[in-house]
Structure formats: C-alpha cells, structure tokens
Picture 1 (cartoon, rainbow, N blue to C red):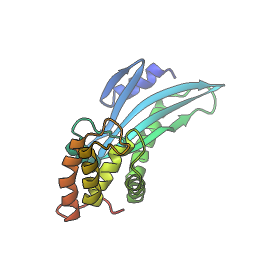
Picture 2: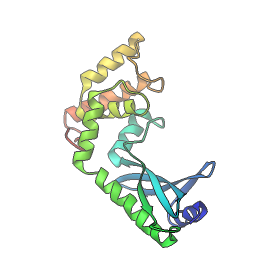
Picture 3: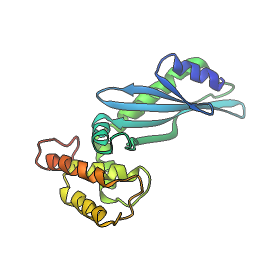
Length: 198
C-alpha cells in the first residue's frame, strides 16, 4: 500500500485538510461526544508494512470550556496518541481492505479515552501541576475551572496584574483568568455540573 492509497481511503469517508508536505488531517468525529482527528501514515518494513494513525481527541465539554476561555487560541489536545493505533502486515504489503480495521481501532481508542477514570486521572495531574510548557497550562486552567478553584485562578490573575507571569508560557494571557473565574464560580456553586469528579 502506498500513502496515496491510504489518504484516498480516508478522503472518501471523512472531512480532511491538507497540512502541507504530504500531511493530511482527517476529522473522524465531531459531535456531542467530542472530536477526534487523525494523521495517517504508512511505512514499509523489511518484507511487511505498518500503517498507523496519530490521533487527537477532545471531549465536547473540554472544547466548549476552551472556546469560552481561550477563544480561538486554546490548545485542544486533551488526549493524544503518537502512532500507537496501528495495523501491520505479516508479510508483504498491507491490503486496502484492512484500513477499515485501522479506522475501527481509532474509534475504539477514543471510546477508551472517554472513560471517566482516564479523564479524572488526566484532570487530577493537570490540576496539581501548572508550570509545564505547551498545551499543559491550558488544560491546567480548564481543570481549575471544573474544580471550582476560584481562589487559585484569582491568585494567578492577581500575579498577572502585578506583572508576575508565574512561569506561564507567553500564550497565556491575563484575560484568560478574567474569563475563567466566573466559570469556576459557576462550577463551585453547582450552577454548572462538572463533567467528571476528580
């Protein structure tokens, strides 16, 4: 199987976007449950082939909070798979009809990630630690919101107002905390119900 065949298979079934350089992003799912996007790849190994999907999945509530707080800047990477959703041939090239199996594995992976214990563990880790780079800090703020930790968010806002960024990455802006605090108050008062307890 060539990568062009892999891409053609998914293009016939899912919305897609050309990312440049031969990379394609496919939207496998975007509904009330959440979103699942993937990047397919294929590689020839000695006498066999491997095809895989690198996946990014987000629960719908996570997307909604990110859009409300970070507007269009949020890091929508709640779950990520770095190519471990795969199929392999025993010998020779992969057959096109095996791509349905790869597709099914992607959806099964997403369902597994949505289990409450996985979500709770991820939120707990991100809630406890804020000073890591990249998208981590976006998820930390989201975890604080769901936890209803108004005091922590107010502390971050006060620090930003004093000019102390507390090791937050440059993408994190003061206005994020200003938008996060009222939402956290709603979760604390139970006006909004947390999607998961952690």
